[in-house]
Length: 413
Image 1 (tube, rainbow, N blue to C red):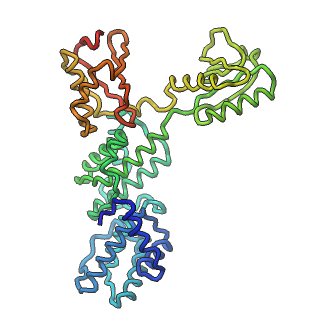
Image 2 (cartoon, helix red, strand yellow):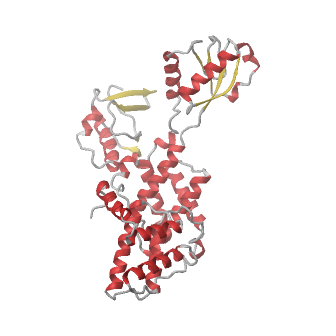
Image 3 (cartoon, rainbow, N blue to C red):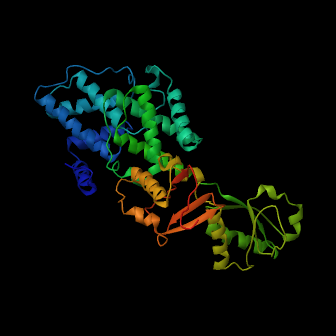
């Protein structure tokens, strides 16, 4: 059964839940009773594996040995496994031996989410400090991408992910996700960070994590990258018509730009010279300003119009408020000291880099990169050329960086 087909998969899962008297329904109740959370896909995988366990027991082909349990001893999943084994035993009228119970516990541990699991369960039994491994991962990510991850919640969750992956590696168990085939093209930078993570884990464990594990790490990194957008701009609001007008302007501006600006203070124009402007990013003023100030300012109408909103929106877009610049860089889309003697050499290098990240790009894309009709060009001091596609390649913000060994002519520059 192809459970990556969502409709078929959820029909299959629902069949477990509709029959309140079924063995599977009672097992799900036991899992919930022990506060073990799983993804829907992992839950179905667990129940399918359990059906194989029951078939083994019914045909007297039970497991006769247990894996080394030292890295998971004492975990609460063993109690859940015992309850499940008792339920199975009553249903099929056959006893479930200790090795089968241990196997059920391993499945629960490897397929469950990390929610409710304490850290450092695994690290007591490996020959290196887990923090050493994680520091090595973050150091390698920084070396290749200049990205920092300082959020405490992310670091806590990331350690959970790493520990769970190490346990699955130890027991040669896998989790599944239907999105691993598309994750690279949808979240290219996050996918690259997951690949770096996999490579560093290989240095320590001499095993690569699976494609699905990489997909899960990619999702985690993508969430962190999304949260690393630039912080809100700190704004000083100047209004000249009194407190009621100031309150109205403040509320109208925050209604439109609540996720992008913080209005730190509001006062009148005549107080401006006494204010330390270094604490603000820019000024929005309903009073016309015609003097040079230490920070940018935007003059708007006393009755705020759509033109005023657009003026502020355009300024925010210009200041790259949406993404930190590092999150637009991808180490696999960078090359330096490139030998190029003509425009086609540059275009072919750009295509080569993109094709490595997006293998479905056709070679005809080279013509797109060569045409004035499909790209816009901006030049800086005859040293830097910015080429921008007029029609997006895909939904990602992609920056390709090519540094040439020597300058050359490119579209008349």
